[in-house]
Image (cartoon, rainbow, N blue to C red; front, side):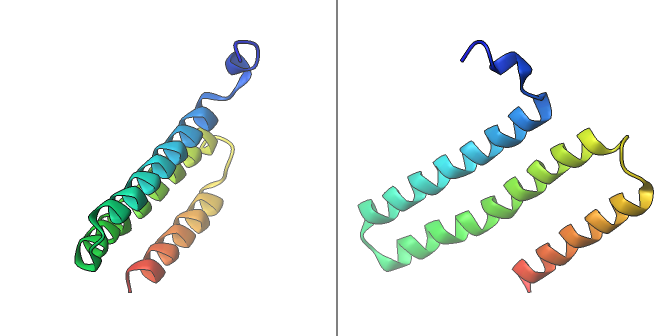
Length: 93
């Protein structure tokens, strides 16, 4: 692991770390639902995940976009931002 870790792009490592955090939270939530064994509590846990998921998505996309900002034109960055906004509208509406 020591050989390939220095060669990983820091932005990619951060994005992967955020996704691992997200996966860990999802697993903990699933175990909590099983532990509570109550539909109301399971819905409450699921509601928390509905907030955490898009937040991790936004943070991960921001990290990626900031690392590519110098390589992309303003038009492309605008289109990507528009796509993210449309995804969030689709999630919340």
